[in-house]
Image (cartoon, helix red, strand yellow):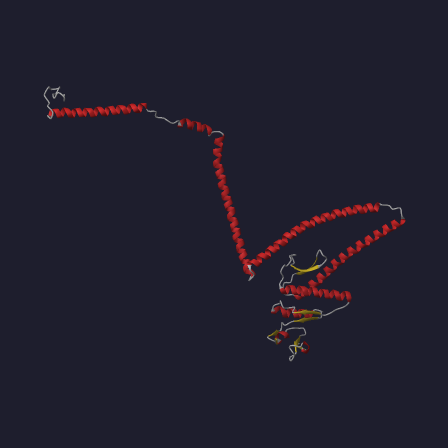
Length: 364
């Protein structure tokens, strides 16, 4: 119609540019747009119908995976939760143990600090060295104990062998009368030797016990108002004797004070003096030089008065009652023993020892 410039509906002419021509042109454009949209829609619908929607096989894979994870694998997976729980409990328990150990470390550190304060001016390095020495001694003691048990076992075996050999020797019956007589003499001398050895050990043990008892009597007298412990005379493996101080619960006092050691040794000397007088009917004076140097002022006076009450002739050389070259006469008046002052006379030649003279003054 547009080409012919005429409307085929009403038969009227429709030249180009007329209202009728434009109307038909707009209608044609609308039709073309409608047709194109319809074609595109049909093409899209056709493309959707031909397209493969499910390209992957996830359902089959999930089904296969469910089969694989069943049975043994399912048990393993189920056990993972229990394993995690056990590990959490283990971590919690180890954490508690660690906290307890840290608390113990703090307590030990606090105790160490208290000990360092009590030790005074002793450096920590010195205390650590002494601790290591003590620990080494304990280790050595353990090794020695094991070695001693081994040696005792060997000794027991050797004694059994000796008894067997001695039995074999005794079972021999020599034909010579002289050999028989020599055998009998040997047996007799052997028994005498054993008896002497046993008696020597027994006598030494009794002697040490008696001396220990006597020394403890003097120890109690010399320390009547103070802690003194008990003296033990210990016989060592090399047949020597050591003097040690113990508490009544059999615990050794490792580091007795200076005054305790002094009184301990003086008590043993008094006991030795008593036994000497008893065995030889001889007595001799005991001379002590600065015996109370480790005592306190209150204990010095008590010590001298206790010594004075003993039936012993004792000479004690001391400077306890001299201060700045002068005698403390008031302190001397509290003593019950005789007191003499020994000093160098004035006017001696400092280059000639022969000019020194000694003066003795009776103070009390």
